[in-house]
Length: 88
Image (cartoon, rainbow, N blue to C red):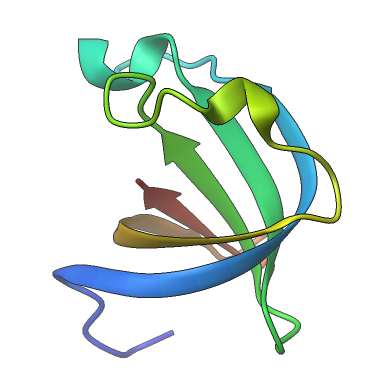
């Protein structure tokens, strides 16, 4: 991916999995959130959205198969996994 992916991007994601966010180096805003894994709707692009519990109080209601829309910032592209990691 060589495009400039700075700034905030609107995405709609078909959810495959929701799990508690874990990781080193996350800001406090994201530490108690959820990681939403899925595909951008209408594409074969895999994404992981690290969602803030402070911004989204309804994270526990998300389930596999649901479609969510959010404005996200690209954290990184993981070439080995062919997956975009987003902050939302």
